[in-house]
Image (tube, rainbow over all chains, first blue to last red; front, side, top):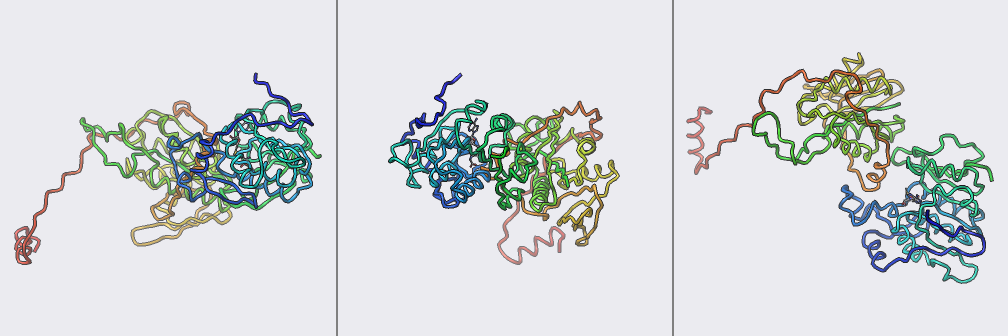
Length: 236
Length: 252
Ligand SMILES: C[S@@+](CC[C@H](N)C(=O)[O-])C[C@H]1O[C@@H](n2cnc3c(N)ncnc32)[C@H](O)[C@@H]1O
């Protein structure tokens, strides 16, 4: 089993990966700058050749989940920016951070510490690129009072309630599509009092969310979805 | 409503086909395979019904070898919600025939109760144009073959059909079978994010034997031949020469 320093209040976590200049160049080469609810991001947009690549084996990297802002993350990014008071001064964990839009939104509204967590190394690279685009720094080089943003490349899904409880807030953007990890993640977070899911209604998304737990619903008419919802599982 | 869309893996429409030396069939070794173009149109129509909120779930179904899973993934990348793969090693251009596929679709339909079955009007390998019709026959359900326009209004499906003399408009009750003609729509290309998502969608695999159906062929292929090679033409020097050549061949 891998050991990690559990996030304890006080000492800020730092990234467990060192991003190389080559990796950053690779991300820049295949993405374009775009804007998601005011957060600047490098993504594979419809203007990028790779957007239209249909042969995954022709890609210069593993499936680039970090190169898109998925509907769940899109809604959560907006929700964070529209409800800064829920995130300001908080210690936040972003599970499956991908392009990092939700983490960056949290930093922009003044979260105290943000741990962006993803198993894909390139998600860390994308986060570093995107942080810079938004004038944010990684890993506590920032001045006192500025958000501490770090990247944790590791699987924490299945780490259990105690691990997640060490964070005031856990944000989960579009992570309810996978037979392997989604059910476990839902279990890990079932009782967390500061969890925010953003999801368009993927396979493992709970069908029924009580009115009390439904925090926002944004129209989203794409891919056969009609809305993306931001919800929690237990009342705060 | 729930929609079944049947998709078939065939030779890619752009490959030059070769006949096997023993003339038993077309050579399928090392040639590019794709989703049958009419199935792409059927799939596109099903996905559009979902986007219009008419369909709640689109289930793509294929009958074919292991590799046909790729075809299902293509359907999922286009927007189908999940897939069912009935696995068989029968050659899907000769041995696996329309009646067998229709029986499989009927059996799966009995479990899932879709309101609509959308198929391509024919596949470009066997060119049979029978599966949809046979399925409707087996189910005793209404069918609109050669659809060029489909809309759903409550429990009625309005279909415009392409027929010899022009267009025919018909209304069908549910469950209904619709087969797609060329002009029904222009299928979308899957994009990378959709392909990535499709990887995560569910595909249920069922062995054809486990369905307890008799799938053996009723038609035997005796010989497959290349089309005759076109004779080379000639060049003429003048109008007079054209006329005399035409007279020679008896056209004039
Ligand atoms: C659909 S993307 C969502 C990304 C982002 N939250 C958004 O909404 O745009 C899913 C992400 O989860 C990551 N992921 C997959 N398994 C994971 C795990 N066990 N722990 C953390 N992240 C994981 C993938 O690498 C990918 O970046």
